[in-house]
Length: 149
Image (tube, rainbow, N blue to C red; front, side, top):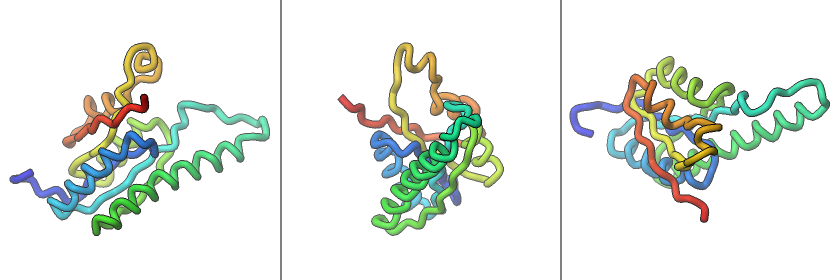
């Protein structure tokens, strides 16, 4: 990491167990560089289309609760390591929102995990990590998570 002064590092989290290794890597990078750390969670608006069915408020509360748990987990891991974490919850398409936030807020580095999806699941859902790696103007570290088997 010599030669580059990282001041702002983003950890993109989805709240899954598999992202734990990426969070640890982001925290370690922040400790080594003295960078400020941001935990970013995107409430995906691509997986549902709430209409007037009476359940959208409950769904919204559930999604916001999951988002808060995800960023709080990063905050807690940061505290244990002596690193302050600023949490950010966004809404939209995850890859687009992560890239937009990184550019608008002047991030120097993005750290994220991947579930390592393959086959039909990857084809149908696409890979958020892949899209971010392809389109990011700043360095991206993708940490492969442990699979649940």
